[in-house]
Length: 167
Image (cartoon, rainbow, N blue to C red; front, side, top):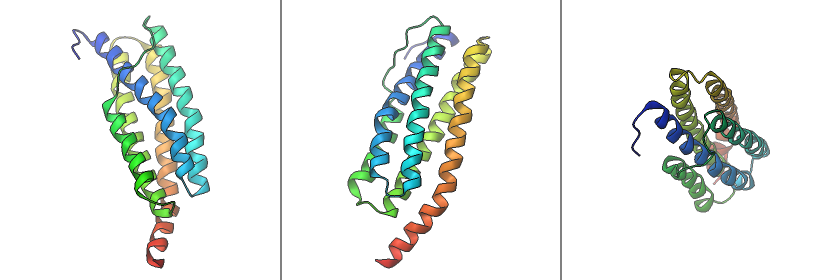
């Protein structure tokens, strides 16, 4: 990627995040289906609906910038999604797999928080306040999802420990 200025960099990074969010729209139903814990399953499905809103916000950001909403492959998200897929493929349904799915999901959330924070800073520096506000809404939601996963992990990790001890 060659960008001659900060605006071009903002657009390139938005394309990356747009692709990342669209990858998640495809991955979250698989993670929900694989989850054994009902609260985790519901959390993945709830975050799927939230992720669809994130895609819409990115489309609004592109429109505000006068750019077409299109993505470019986000290799980081591709790798993070593959980690979640490996947890599903390599393990039978169990609290251990649920713990792995939470870990994969939290890595995704941390990546997204960092990516959105970067592009929000670019938008702010460029005076694109409306774009920055849209991005900030998503950062807040991603942070809330991460906190929910942390809380849920306390239960799931206890279940995983008990499952391993019963073997």
